[in-house]
Length: 255
Image (tube, rainbow, N blue to C red; front, side, top):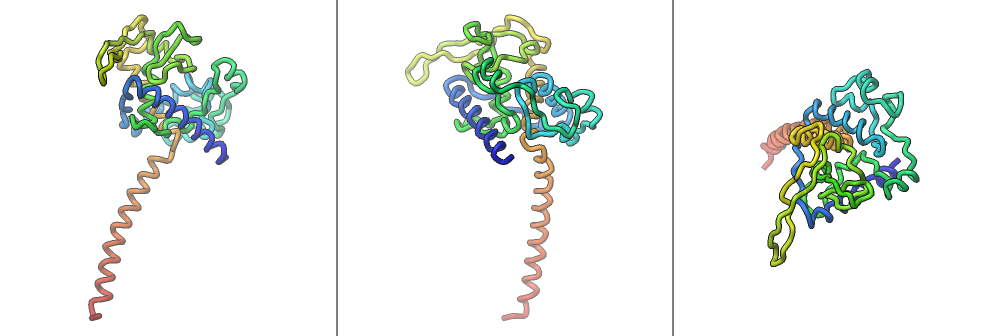
């Protein structure tokens, strides 16, 4: 199990680091709205998006369905709305996709996403969550690619845009600028060619929910750990005062 977790972390780091280098010569990463991590409604919507759009190809094999009790979902709600790949809420979020077929179709095996958002950028542009938030929002039509899609945050990406019906179809626009004495093309905006079922603001909000779920999935006990840490620090602070007064009382008559 430890070996599998380390392998998943390594794949995730390679994916994010590779994207960091790709984005380093292109667009800057947007900041993921961290307040989403404390919203059960956002995490629940992110879980729904993950199960409906990501779980076909990407597993989260270190997360159990019933762990979503922690974000306010009952076992009955999980069974009714999220349990498509198995019939037991105690099972992990695995997929039935054959890795050999996946590599044949996409050129690479889709990585496990259990810890993808916990991977950090080696290029110093931001966190893994920042990258994912940018990546999911910068797909565009590119007929020169086998999938028909490309991505500004990760050029020549093998993954197709599975969320295109929500976002619609668009192409990036560029302006020419001079940087370090050289003429370069700088990303300036988007040209919408076909509207999606969500407007730009609603789509960005949905992607923030999805990234929040992926961030939560990497460490479901993060909120509990932070709360416990606060209590531990409080205890240490009180104990320090008590120990200081005891020390003073013990040595007061000793010259």
